[in-house]
Image (cartoon, rainbow, N blue to C red):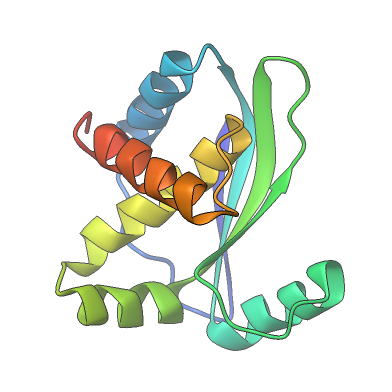
Length: 136
């Protein structure tokens, strides 16, 4: 159901069973079923390349979500820049693993249909991230 890959960067330590159970619990809150999710951990250069190539965006980001959800079964490829996760953790004064969990679930929430394009949507997304983080 959930696969983890790394490109050009060391794989972070993840307890796959705990993460799977947590992600499944969150998806069920939104009436969704867990399909195939691939997390691809990369560096800033790779995420910039993906952002340029597929979204025509010329900036770094922590996550890019490619949504392949069909009906109620969520699926997708989630590219995560561990460089940006690390710098965000430092900027926000939180532990790296805490920030990584936030980004992991952020992508899942996108797959569940939660948007974050407007200020109001971003506030809602942060609230939903916090709710999800409390379920770990």
